[in-house]
Image 1 (cartoon, rainbow, N blue to C red):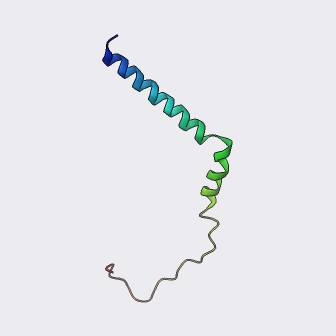
Image 2: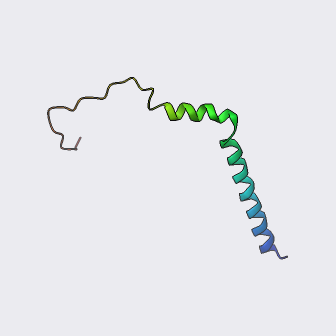
Image 3: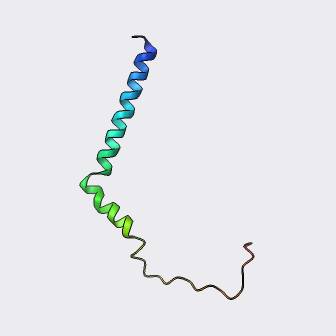
Length: 61
């Protein structure tokens, strides 16, 4: 095994380890509450939608 093959093996193992850590963090019980809050954030808005103005906008500011 030369140095190039060892480097590729090490890189593959690091990528796989990173993937496993990301999956564990995403599916942990601590993250569930945060993800549920983010998913329902749109529905919790109490602000009314602005009515369109009577003057059309040219798009320039």
